[in-house]
Image (cartoon, rainbow, N blue to C red; front, side, top):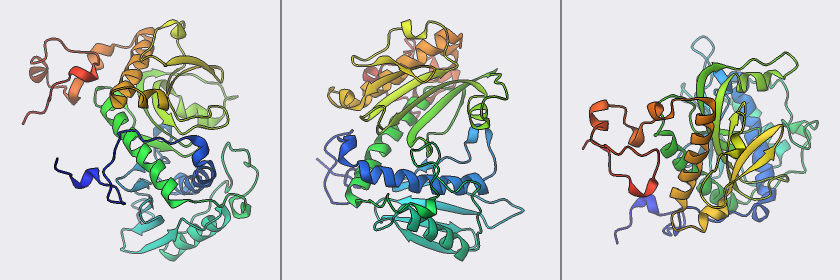
Length: 345
């Protein structure tokens, strides 16, 4: 067998499985620290990004080495800059379009020291940022300023890199899932407030929410939405889990059967979500195909209940060209095991 560079990790070992094990308890202290690191940089994006619908300007995107913000700053108020987490060199790298760079190491930092170092690094490259709320969002210590958090100070490089490797693989799964839909769709993105990676499919239908609903939620769910994602687990869901849900939830959604075995509807907030345990996917002969089957199964259930033209919106293999589509007379809604190479070359 010929080994390509893409198959080899930083240790030189070939990746043995598509979805490595990542039990929550195996890295919880690092996860809780890294979650807050991501919120600090996410709030920088919130302060300095060009506002996009559904808050998509604030999210982090996956790279081959970690996460990055979108380019931040404006044409009127430069410099343009990015903040990128590198889980191989284990640093936050800040770079501007003026050529300036600054680096903040990740190991050995508390949330307080990382916050201070990041704000200093931004200032050093010509960027001054004032966070509106420099404290965690929707976490148990939400009232404690970042600058005072010396409790969360765990960063194990090997565990952070392993977790990113899982996230990277799931990101590819979500990209493949996204390629089968030609409607309005978000990027695959890391939501730093809940520390999950997700993609949203949206319809044009506007959802009316009263002023009593907080503005974050009103913007996030202003259009009919079917979301698909993955999180590492938390106190409520104590294991890595693939998830999907429809917002608002259509009537009788939970009466729809979903696949594969192990997927189920569960109560979640005021409605329901579909959960599929990461370990259940890992136990199958085709973990990637099983995750794709789950996402597509829940999407079809939600789309049918909401009256979406699911077949018209499908673009299996990423193809919308009607001539090319005619070469697939038995167009599948989704069957990961019998796809044919749809590339034109």
